[in-house]
Image (tube, rainbow, N blue to C red):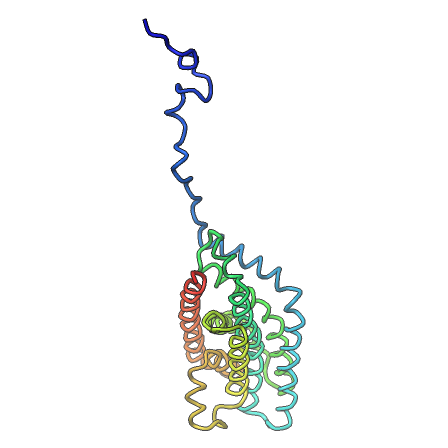
Length: 278
């Protein structure tokens, strides 16, 4: 006659009767699925916009004041025509370059130097959402300054305000191209100081090659101007000041901005992946 323990018959919790239903403690718990791109992008964008709202507004004021000051100085040198259109368009896009290129390069350079990328690497969000969210937030701050600069410049140089609605396309496309370039500079720079220097140099290039008329530049700088992403935003905006704008050429310039923006943001996403795993 065999004796069966009472625990095996009663099936109380913690007994052999429910052992097959309990998970093996040696097996790791399943991870939560990664968040989708669009919800992650929206969350990162809102977080960056809220974070940078207080810190970046004074710098945006500086960028706008700088661009308006350049136009005031050029008013005594430029007497109108194509040169005045180039000055107004270049000064307007310079606000985008100051924020989207210069400040974003500094932000990602500081984030990498301080180990802040480790925080983003632990979040279940795609790398593209981090790069696009930060770039979109910084580019959004350029809207009021760019519009104000374009309107003020049109008044200073007596240019028509009729087609300034094209800024609806110029600002996001130029912002995407310049923000992608700024993110690449900040993520690939070996040190934070180098990222700051590269951002300053990029903004200086946008100032020199964008505000000055192309026919006043030496031959070598004309080729460098064609390589700068902001050039095509400047050209698109400058063409709209004509009495009869060439909308085909405007669309082509904006298409180049869009293509450069997609490429630069893709490179920035790859650079973010590389920097986050180190």
